[in-house]
Amino acid sequence: MRRYVNAALNDQQCGSGLPFVIVDVQTDQVIGSTRYMDIALQHFRLEIGATWLTPTHQRSRANTETKLLLLGHAFESLGIKRVVFKTEVLNENSRRALARIGAVEEGTFRQHLYTTSGRARDMVYFAILGEDWPRVKAALMCRLS
Image (cartoon, rainbow, N blue to C red; front, side):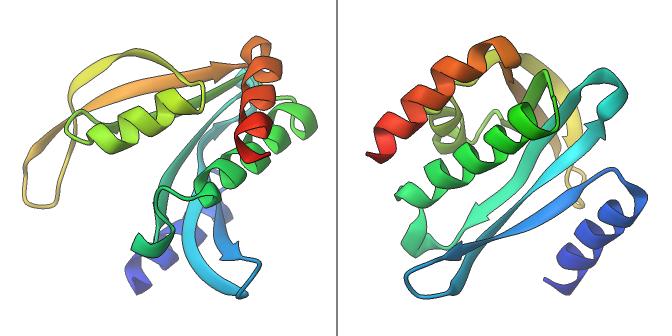
């Protein structure tokens, strides 16, 4: 965990990432983390990723609320035009969750990343564009109500 946090903070120092903790406001407990990654403001693009939630908060409204806040800030405050998500092709739960929030599957990058053990990971890319945001925002807000 120490390496994970240090890497996230290093990316923040370099300007290529911005980490966030996810807090359960009922208990004031940290229940996960996420971040803006691969920030390319000159191209009006960033990635939301490295997201995880404790098992007790998976498949809860926490992920929906988090994505609503992150996407709202990206599109409405930062002027981002494209938010990217990527997940391993084997991660069916993540792929379903991204589709559920309104991200559009764009394609698979074969052997795009490698684990520390050397296993190749095929990554599926999803995106939400600025023009999609009003529809996605309305759907997320509806899911939360």
